[in-house]
Length: 208
Image (cartoon, rainbow, N blue to C red; front, top):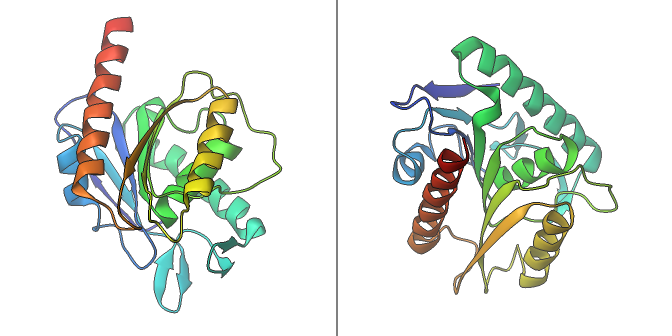
């Protein structure tokens, strides 16, 4: 998978897996990583699917309707890539925290839904439920931040609450942050996710 890896300054900071939205690329979220966790190593990936020339992480049949077979395949592909990248770049596979926006948040959510222990945590900006009617793996204690907009026409309030409920039902520890905006990524949710990640790291450091 086309990607960028940047070595961080701290071996104890999480490795940030950056996953862009539709039409983005592996450079889009690099500035965001510096805001959220400047000490972290960063693995930023470009989606392998093109929709009218725009990179995505999996196909969709229409707006908000996912191609579930392709979603499952691409999720497995990404999970295998993370194993390979950890070996290639020498980072701890168990310290990966996904940071995904929109389509990138959806593939990150799919990793959580399909692969136990694929991620150490996730920051999901404007995610949808990746797949329904699936028994989820045990996510006990898994930290997840969800940034959402009360006026988001794509990821509606009910969609966001459904995803939150599914993750909590599997045992995840979910922080849901609401802004009164639409689908765009806001400065306040980025700041909230930064504070959440700092708190998560402090808690981990105190228990290690």
